[in-house]
Length: 125
Image (tube, rainbow, N blue to C red; front, top):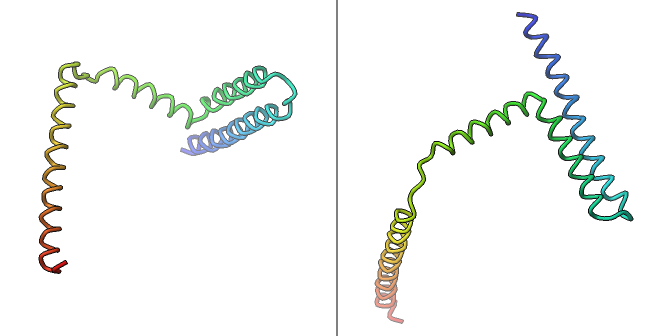
């Protein structure tokens, strides 16, 4: 049992160091982007993108990063299982929603007009 706790503690410390590395790499990329402002924008953007990719690679090696990648993969599998509606079904449902919105707006307009008439009748204005 102690081995598991020690392993978790060392993993946690290593993860903290990795996250510190991510922050340093991203900070260095942003610093370099502005420090080398006299260079071409394309070169600076490529450097910033390279630093971002390196930071993502480092972050993906942490426990949180691994769980995030696993979540993304599982989400992708779930999206592939979705049965998407056909074009005809989408058009019909859109038409039905628009019709219901129009009907409901007419009902609310009628109620508003009725209440406004009642208020004018009561206040005599």
